[in-house]
Length: 144
Image (tube, rainbow, N blue to C red; front, side, top):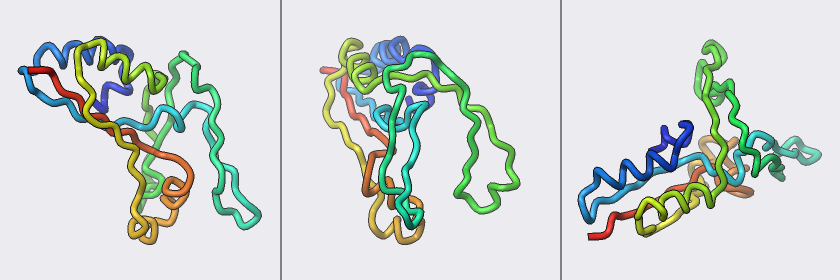
């Protein structure tokens, strides 16, 4: 389902997944958090250069775009060409209501934070621990 966040028709995908699941079947997926990772998001550093605030804009924008992306924190990423990721922006309610309208019962929603241990290993994650969720986890079930 995560690949479907980058697809043009999440609603149709949700209905099709619901159709092929057996009663009692579960759907679990994670997506980039739609509330914070918008086309217009960015970080505001403090006087020491630490990211202390996140800005979000264009949350309700519906126009798709192509983002050029790379695994910038991975070793050797400077030698990797950026790749294209299509973005089809949706709000939190777009995602959740599409699942409900498809027939799913929502069991759990989570906005995980990096652990402090993970932040010590990868300091760039600290901003996500302190200020905003980078992912959204959703668990739904098809009624029996």
